[in-house]
Length: 162
Image 1 (cartoon, rainbow, N blue to C red):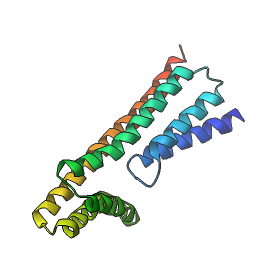
Image 2: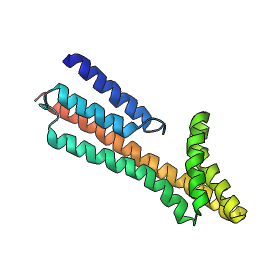
Image 3: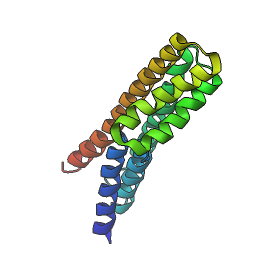
Image 4: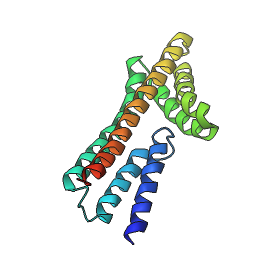
């Protein structure tokens, strides 16, 4: 049973790692779930309560940064409410169009929302680019948190050998 739990936990961590770059998969949540399952499978001997709490905090911060960075990127350029909704809808629609849709869906949605709201092409372009930059910053933060989770798990596992 322990072996099955460990395999399931490692699969969750690996799937979560892939989910950090593909927004349709809750990457950091899966990674934390896998870390908790690893701790549970080893009776909290390798990964204790303090490390699980630390990993939960990292996962929460990374998830929040992912959402907040895109919104701040749009707001920094003076986006209207329709532009923010356009970025949200563009992000969802872009998920169905593979990597280009994931990258450019929120940007196009924000630009179209701003164009509809204010009829200003220059402002729509600024909002679209601001949303794209925010998306990239959020993704970098999320990947950084994912690497923190993976490296913490690896280092604690290696430290358990000694």
